[in-house]
Amino acid sequence: MPAPLSKSATTVMEDLFSRRDVLVYGSATLGTLGAALAAWPLIDSMNPAADVLALSTTEVDLTGIAVGQAITVTWQGKPVFIRHRTEAEIAAAQAVDPTTLRDPQSDAERVQQPAWLVAVGICTHLGCIPLGQKAGDPRGEFDGWFCPCHGSHYDTAGRARKGPAPLNLAIPPYAFLDDARIRIG
Image (tube, rainbow, N blue to C red; front, side):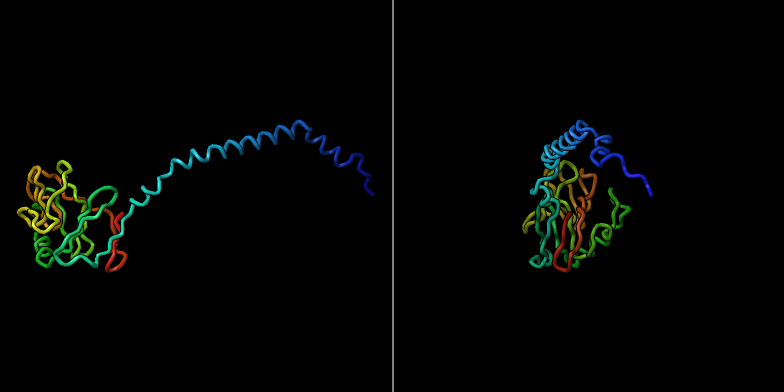
């Protein structure tokens, strides 16, 4: 039979941890927890605000846009041109040889569905807003957009065709949610 324990459980604990050790470890734990709780509002304030998150994506209903019509929506503070292209506009855009362009891109590289062009409406020369969205606006020599500030002309695929613009109109990231809606961003 084993010999009885000579020390009580309290005595064993006192040998392992003195009262001072318990106070030091407990205070350090509570101090660390308090510092983390105090730092949380500072860390949380570095997250983007709700208005910024709301601007990161824009959903657009396409049902009200007639063939040949264009609208402008805002995404991340920038105008985005959405044009429901006619068969003639699609044919004209597809007929262009991309190797003849200063920023060579085919029409198929710029659109997800041939009937819809989605492009950031900022001239790539000096950041002006090209005309051509509203009925009666000058559309330039290629029936797309015209920037009157310095004379840049864009075609129906948003490609720079004439003037000082070095690049095509930018294509934002977008996806068709269904046949009648897109999400930009």
